[in-house]
Amino acid sequence: MAWSYATHYSCDNCGEVYDLNQPLNTCPQCGGLLEIHYDLDKMKLELRPEQFAGREPSMWRWHEFYPLRSASHMISLGEGGTPLIPSVYAGPKLGLDRLYFKNDALMPTGSFKDRGFSLAVSFAKELGITRGLTYSSGNAGASFAAYAKRAGMHAAVLVEYLANPVKKSIIELYGADTATLYFDSMTEITDMLEQAVTNLGLYQFVNFINPVRHEAMKGYAYEISQLMDWAAPDVMIHPVGTGGGIWGAWKGFRELQQLGWISSLPRMVAVQPSATAPIPRAFRQGLTRAERHGDTSKTIAQSIAADSPIQGGTRVLRAVYDSGGFAEEVTDEEILEAMQWLGNEGICAEPASASTVAALKRAVAEGRIQSGESVVCVITGSGLKQPGAIQQTVTESPLRLNASYPELRELLSKLWG
Ligand SMILES: *Cc1c(COP(=O)(O)O)cnc(C)c1O
Ligand SMILES: [Zn+2]
Image (cartoon, rainbow, N blue to C red; front, top):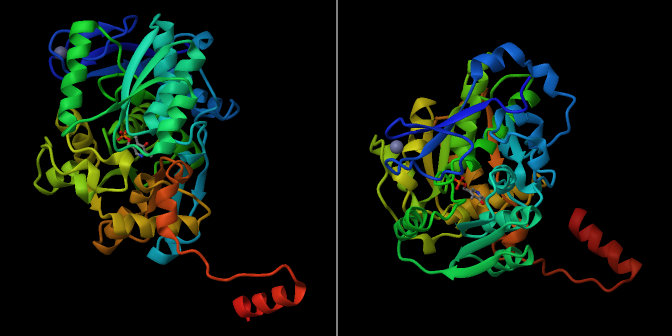
């Protein structure tokens, strides 16, 4: 039995294949996006779902499904293996009996980005990479910085000027070199990075330009399916920036189906804020490529404020169409309400993550999701890193109390009768 069953990269665009022992970003021939492949036939013969149950509950439980070759290069802080929490508030409110939250806010640096960076940094280290670059609205930078530091790698993080100060400080706390990044459209960023790949050979950690990060997001599929006794949910809702999360999850579910470990696939739902909703817009028009759309400064959902989808958002749209899913846009108002709903579940989510619950509410109203269906909303990041947004969702209690028992008794009878 192999530690990894990964076999090669192939290019989405020209089909060229490449050996995995080179640290590639985009296709050296044509600049297309690379995808990693696995020997699924061999995996089907050699692996059984039961054998994964006893392993440590982190994303590395599934190492056979990732491209890292040796455990000795693994850079891990205990990422993945997050709980699937049944809803006690939103579900009953929307008439859904089987609504779950996959709570990745519990990750080491507070967001699901840790899955991708644990794997991508480990993989880069295994291939001898000592320097890397990414841009970030906050969470990716924090995660990259933490894992790169542990790997002894120089990390440069270009922090978008819209990122909130707490996230910026966290990136510096983890020891990355940072610069604030100004831009009009995200197309400028991807153009700049593509030139850096071509001219400097600089290894990059931006989703999809880096072909490894989204491989780790397949872990959602493995973890959720295992927790559901080897069945997929009917619907999976994921917030979309670049689309690494939703694409990785979709790839993971397809692998499990090919292995025969699950018999059906979920409908994948992509969510973006109305202020920048290129994917929902393309979906409504039935297009397979999304055009630049919107203004990234006009939403509180910073982590998914993306106006220019990488390579036209083709992977995200494929996941949506091929799964029979759909794309939703949601307003900041709906997101703030969803944050309150999640508060009632005991979950403190950042706006980008709460967008999944806002989208669910819309989808139920539109009849796209039925009451008997099982639904998973991924909570991708913790609200603790965006405290300003949390403050926006609540009004401070005007009640005051002097520390005396009679006053306490009076207060409680006022509150509870
Ligand atoms: C990055 C991020 C997303 C979007 O993920 P992509 O893989 O870029 O689509 C969603 N939610 C949070 C909290 C994030 O940090
Ligand atoms: Zn190519």
